[in-house]
Image (tube, rainbow, N blue to C red; front, side, top):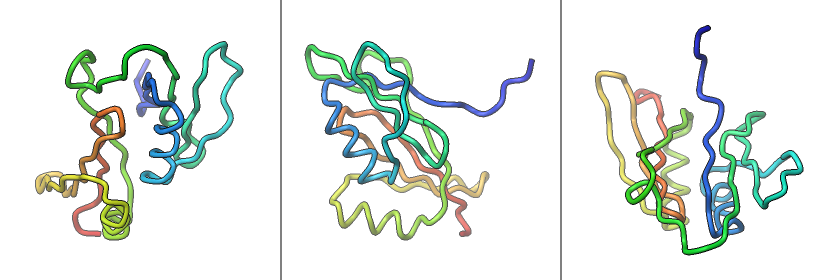
Length: 126
């Protein structure tokens, strides 16, 4: 067996509608087909891939990776960094910009409404 590319991440949240809106508005993903599970949720698609599976839970607000989870972040590769930064600024979304020169990457780090760290990787020379 050989592992391929990561298929998806599963994110539990107490604010399902807010998270669906954020992944749609900020990252440009869309909510799409999802099996009829016996619990609330949404599959957020990047192109044809259901890359983020949101699971609605009840209880105290979710807190993000800094408190209970061992996953520090997940990442997407993308193109169009200038337009993405303009969009983040227009939406007043907090983000941090970094470069990884050895890998020719520009990384845009941001956090969803539950505090999950996501970074978007762009070719630094695009």
